[in-house]
Image (cartoon, rainbow, N blue to C red; front, side):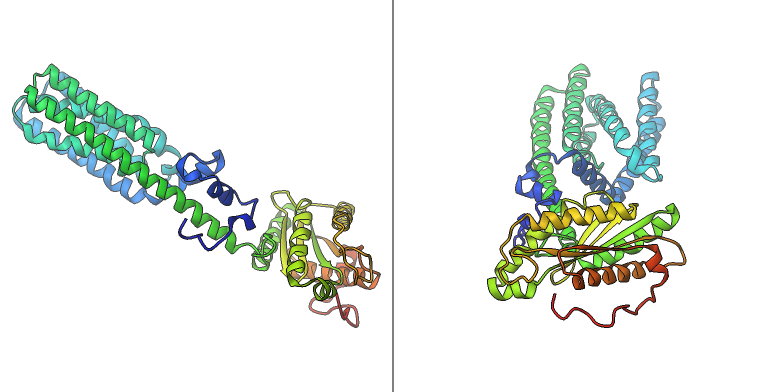
Length: 408
């Protein structure tokens, strides 16, 4: 895990990529959701190679058909075989260049590639038995392509390789290819399949590890390194996107600002390491209440966290905030210098606003900040709610209270 060797996946225990890395998942299939994501990304990354290979397969088959026509050695069976080979190759090429590539390519390729290769291998054996041994050079290429050029998964490529070799050897015996050639071909092709499988397995393991590392790094870039929550940049972007969605859906959004009470005093007494641990425990506790797909929790700065709850009423949002407050207090983290309680507590400002095109999401955030201020001046360890009525009176960029709390 070269890329993440300096990072600790345990900092983000809920990250599916960190979980898979800790479990050594590069040696096996991922969980179904991650496996589907990995297959999709790998397929799309290799699309250009698949396109070129599929087109070349059509051209080679067509050129071989032209050569056969010049020789005048067509038979009804040969016509059927060539028709199937060219049709299958053309279908794959068409899918590779179509918008339906991601959805259709692999299901078709899993069938077409092994079937086509078995037909071609049998044809090569028959032609080689007639004295054209130079065509034998095409068989190794047919073994390599499914592993590395057609975007197939290892099991499918291995099945294709085994069927290709079996078809070639069967046809070689039927058409009486010289026994020494058959034996040499069998040994060489078997070794080629084994070598391709080993190389493809190593490549897939590296690809899986790289996939997890890249996704984990991207995941880490969106998180606060200390608490494991999302960072402020992600929160701001999510608020803008979710506001636009709420405008279209006609829904309300709740913005919660949560602040650890008397946190400077806590750091002064217990030290910054203890303060870091306290912030992590608070974040983990709050995260239990912010779990829905469109909701988000972020560290907004210092000892302050911000959360968005989508499509909730004012009463629901306040209830969630009060349960968060109680859950943090129930952690019973000692705080002897707190003027509010003997344990670590939080204050929460809640703003619930129905999103409209005429309103600004930053106004909802300012309203939550105003509510947090009210919770602070009202004694801390409490929740204050502001809603549409207060929003209508809000002057964006102007804090309504004359002064801020001097020490949070």
